[in-house]
Amino acid sequence: MNQYFDNNKNLESNMQENKVKVLDTEFYMYTDNGVFNKKGLDFGTRVLLENLDIENKNSFLDVGCGCGPIGMYILLNKPDSVVDMIDVNNRAIKLTKMGLKKNHISGEVFNSDAYQNVEGRYDMIITNPPIHAGKQKIYKIVREAKSHLNKDGEVWIVIRKDQGAATLIKDNSDLFQFEVIDKIKGFWIIKGCLI
Ligand SMILES: C[S@@+](CC[C@H](N)C(=O)[O-])C[C@H]1O[C@@H](n2cnc3c(N)ncnc32)[C@H](O)[C@@H]1O
Image 1 (tube, rainbow, N blue to C red):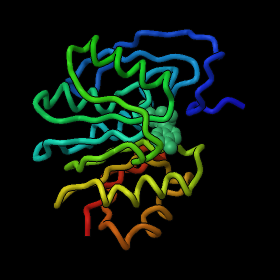
Image 2: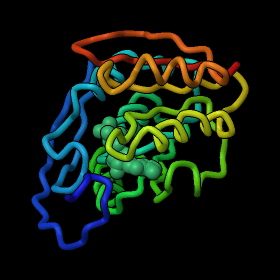
Image 3: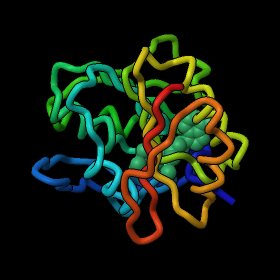
């Protein structure tokens, strides 16, 4: 079965240009087969962005960027900030680069399995994590965020209640002080501050 994080070059392309609006921010996002979310902006990602408090932050890492909605939304609202975006799916990386160009914004987009190719530290790490990659991978993304955050850094996660939101909080509370910022239709928006 093809998961959306596979690099399957034989998967037929059906690229779409989507115009999306989150709060007052309108932008374009390219989607395609084999990339999350091929239907456009994911509801969980929308709720995450609607809650994200980026005001006092200047550098951001979007882990598992997919088609790039999180990083692009941040750049459109904070054009002077540093935004890096990573994914293991090369088609997603290509679509994110196209989206950045279309929206006239610039950020770094590169292939990285979790933080494998990440060198910097950031004020905020944001993720709509790859649930299908399994709990171990999700926990790696959450726990290793610690080594890539600046002092007072925050990790923001959107995860569904039935995908283990409460357990994720419990199991990682040794590293982060978590706060549930919002709960909508089973999606939990979780902020974790470095302890
Ligand atoms: C749920 S999607 C979120 C995509 C995008 N951020 C959004 O909100 O629409 C998770 C993304 O994580 C990527 N991913 C899967 N395993 C990964 C890994 N080990 N390291 C980094 N990204 C990964 C997938 O390819 C996918 O694009």
